[in-house]
Image (tube, rainbow, N blue to C red; front, side):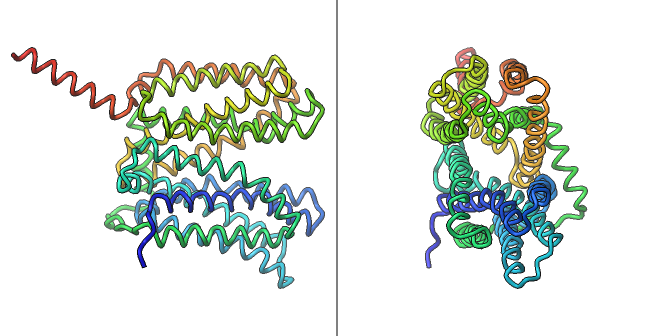
Length: 418
């Protein structure tokens, strides 16, 4: 049987796997609340599912580089699916203890991030084989992520109401199995990296050393991580509080969060269509500036339609920025190090997100809503300033610009010689 086209299949597999992951983050806590009635245990279960993701992302990088990204993606998805499936299976058998659920949720999260990082490592080769530019490929890839995040939560809520939490966990497990099957079928496994006389610790150090020595890579690790720290609190913390205190309407929170998420999809689509025409770093900097201004406009407490429009545009900026950052990292990382470099970036961002949520929650209590938005805006202005003046960001111009400059210099040299 002919293999399906590898790159479109990878996009679909990524969307399905992430959809299952988002559903699991809702279905597991709901399952605990439904079966135990304990809010405290529900919080512990949610924490157990989220905590290991950063650990798994960082630890899985060297393994991905040794066995190959396709194999790593398949194995990690299978392990995640098996861990999630064991929860309703043991529950149906009457053998599920709370500590078992915590352990299985921990394992599900531990394997999820390495699978996502491995799929990222597959993008450059599969896009090249499909004759798709790396910028467009990353826009499409990250667009699937935005779709999964926007659709996952409401879909989980509907399915839990209709089927019950245990059956939704079966569907979560099936999504991981489907992703693993698609990648195994469509994506060539490639050759595993030749075994070298190095330890796992040596491999970790090599990846970190490579990032540290390349100031462009370091910058494109630090800036997105700090950006994640600033933007991650909006959906779970800031916008619900904004809707409650300004509009006194829980539906307003849903509308604003949806606008932000849909904006992310639109931003990825915009980048996919515009990346061939717009110079990379100029558009990257413009997106940062506009996002900062739009975010600060929330301080003026606009009417709900205006707030929704602002958040949609902020989401567009976020969706536009992400593919550029990912493209830069892919271009500057050799294939044999992609697993470690991408896993390091993912681990940093996974640590930053919950930290940002905790800090924003504390700021809301201390500074209030306006003070918190102002603090985030000031920090965002500082980070945007780094993006505007950093020499490392300037050197991350597109390969088209680099090649054009090299051709121009060569032509000038030829003219001088004549």
